[in-house]
Length: 286
Image (cartoon, rainbow, N blue to C red):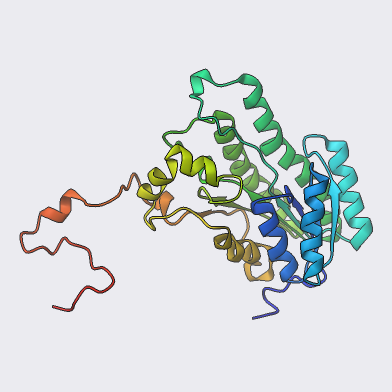
């Protein structure tokens, strides 16, 4: 089983690896043995990621790169290949959003374009550049970081560019999986719920949106960074060797809920003997 999840000797590029979930992804893959190429625009924060991985005995290089500029992406990918000899895994994590809570009809056209340029076009730039190496090797693995917001509408959903970009990511994932799968390159995506991270915590709590999200999620909480460790390692490793073109929700059951809300439910009152009440930890046996 250790071999099944091992990434020893493989090279993994992680975009947006300067903070948040990108740091989590880089550390998980490094822990499984991968050589990490951490890339983002903020080189100073990237160096913190690099030092953290190296302190645990891993190998990591930090390369500054703006994914919206294909020339920079191409140069970064070449440097990754020159450094470690090959490119095996690409985690397309780089992305931006807009946390101001502006209604769609009042939103900025420039912000819409910036989000799509980073979250969709930038992801395509990285995929295309990495594919040049992966297809020639006859093996590669691209993992796109999408979102549950790419799977449909969500109220209140006030970032139209983000919804549009992540919907495009999901369809591009499936299209590339079909086109490149017969040449040994798998393409999948993770679609996370909202996650409580250093970037999102104050916004979620301060806005009151945390409670709304917890009420709508069957597991009654939003995501934690540790919840993504298993899924990213699964998709990156041979444990998912026949998984291709999948958009995997990491959402505590939210996308299965079909409008599910917080209890109590009206149906709890239908049975006069109280059998609509849920069994809870510590409920005595009758």
